[in-house]
Amino acid sequence: MALAATPDGRAYAGLMTTPSETAPGDARPEPTRSSFVTWRNRIIALVVLAVVLWVSYLILAAFIPRWWAQRIAENVHGSFAKGIWSGLAIGIICTAVPLFLLLTAGMTWRKRSGPFIAGASAVLAILAAIPNLMTLTIVLGDSNAAHAGERILDVDAPGYRGAVLVGAIVAALLFAVVAFLVIRRRFRRNRAEKQRGVPEKQHVPVEIPPTPPGSGTI
Image 1: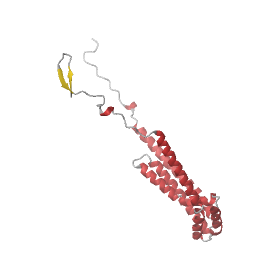
Image 2 (image 1 turned 180 degrees about the vertical axis):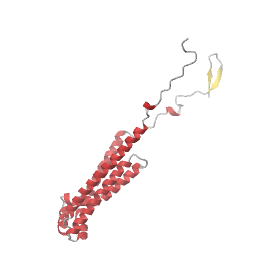
Image 3 (image 1 turned 90 degrees about the horizontal axis):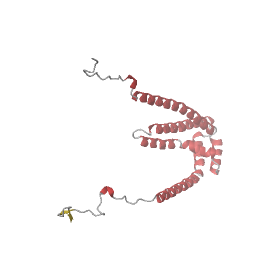
Image 4 (image 1 turned 30 degrees about the horizontal axis):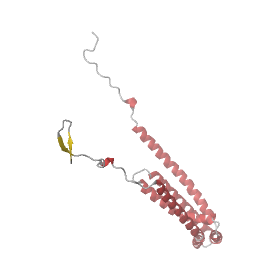
């Protein structure tokens, strides 16, 4: 509270605001963390993640191929027919299911609760593809475990690797056909909805204002 004078010399009591007393909206924002520190932490996290993934790959590459080949060999027992049917079943199922789950994730991403459904579908797709991925570690791997897995499959699961490849190709072709039909149907439906939503300006009648009385010619 302070006294202030009017132009005519009279004094009155009033509130005087100091420079420090500013409106809440005029307050300066609190200092945030610098972008340099943020990017530095992100880079460090990415490097740590890459190292962990690389170490995990080295550990799994020395274990997975031999272990998976032994599991297949225990199921096939050296039977050529069993190896072919097992390979076809795993190749088709473990290729078609992940692909259709990824298609579901892509089609539901922009819908309500879409990110959750898409994320769950992606995780399930990775899990469903694990048998094929483990077979790839045997076929494409250069480690001692991969070579040991190849020898096990050659002796105890003949025809398995080739049947997996055939099943994967069949599943991919089936997925391509279904995905084409689904996407084309969705595209046509969206185009029809857009056409229905466009206002038909050509069909709107033009209203002619009435002629005011007395405006005619005499």
